Image (cartoon, protein in one colour):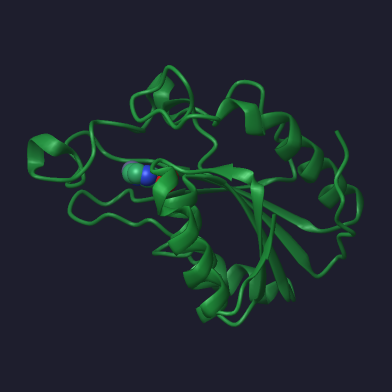
Length: 188
Ligand code: VGL
Ligand code: ZN
């Protein structure tokens, strides 16, 4: 697989939550999750080769996180820190220069966007990043939130829909519309 994009040094590729628990066999499995891996690996390759920044976020919850259903939250137990389900997908190739970002690590709050509580916006600005390219899981949850926040943070934002999969596929048209309304470009 090859990337169709021409990355520049002022670009950042954000790979959102490509973790075992969000892929087939995981605790919060999303249909089509694993199938994204070869294409995302190709994007990571192309971005690094062009001198762009690559960021991989992970959902990284404490045991008893507030988003889990036994605490009244909307989700089954998933992506608990240091458990196998929280690991990046085993076939995802993350060279050393990829920046790892952990999110939703506080007990009492969920954080869907890779920018939320991580300092990622300031980090990207320090590196003079102008455009962010977003893909990964889940399209309708953390990818959606990350794209909207990238727009709010003032980055030119491109969403790679073919390299993303939704927990609820019925939500895709709404998510796409909201991203476009926020100023993002959607690449299908
Ligand atoms: C996510 C549900 C719960 C995601 C995280 O990464 O999209 N979804 N926590
Ligand atoms: Zn979560």
